[in-house]
Image (cartoon, rainbow, N blue to C red; front, side, top):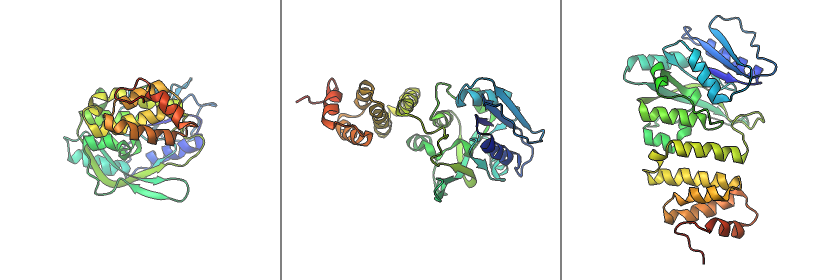
Length: 293
């Protein structure tokens, strides 16, 4: 299932890669999320279905709509600027059919930064578990998964999110279902700096979205000091980038006291603040455990 808006050439390549699988019994759903003009793929294939939203509802809601019309017993996702290798569905479907207790499998992708640098990830010897997935959520990308339809009975995309959608979806699945890693490369993930990339958002949007992630998974994050440091440091950094001092203070307050100030200083330097001392004093006011000398 592919969601797309105003990128007809890219999504055409993505859709063809999904149709050109060695396992040919597939249904490919493209959700046109309010493209202007409306999307025309010019692909004559009865396995392809285009569903249109007249007004854009965002990637999360568009994907959920695609799930609602899908009929298959297995589902997979593809970003509209990426593509599958022909063996993707066959390799992962064979694994799930051989392991009926496994609900989702994910695999490797070829990550292309658009500057001639290509890397296969995750590594072949990567060992998956739920906590590792929380520490390194980008190891499991939407393009790399295949999952049983029953997963959708309990997990959908959170429609508040315009970023980190794959984090939310895959992290939730890893908490509720059996997930395995199959080390075979199944497609290409473009990580270039093209201006229309959905991952490139302003600082305030990144902060709002990551705050939702921290709220959704607070029970897991707060039980592990390493996760607390990782997530709340990132949240505090994004708040500082967005010049939201109150939320920055709240984020760093979640961290163990001995970690607060090194994390804060690093975040301030990374955020490019013009006055580290002024912002530090502003941040420190009211921070539990901070010295105001």
